[in-house]
Length: 157
Image (cartoon, rainbow, N blue to C red; front, top):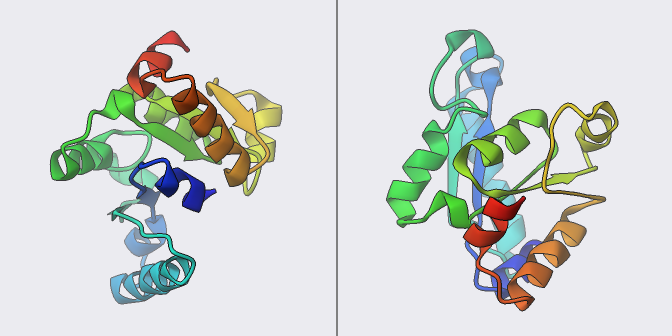
């Protein structure tokens, strides 16, 4: 799925809440090594991630960078000169979908990880619900094939 998204000319940015840092369960160096290994594995399959943005705070910290707050995507937007409304947010949690809705992006809930439970609860309204990342990439490909601007599609849904 990630490879397909890259072949479509899209960038890949990871935005992740990691409260284990704020709670002291995980050191930043360990998280950095996890991300380094993830990037190695992806690169060995021809996939590059353009950026990883991490919120280290706990939910109780009430920061502006913890999803669904938009602080990290705002920073990524500045770093990559991207229009958030031309983005697609793919995730398996309510906070992922809510983040996407707040920035006017297309949202895709994957049923992997926590996604199946989120879909059952109906606690958020994504633009699309799919089984996994491959299916999410196919949705994006279909939108691009229709020659619709992603920002226009997000506004419609």
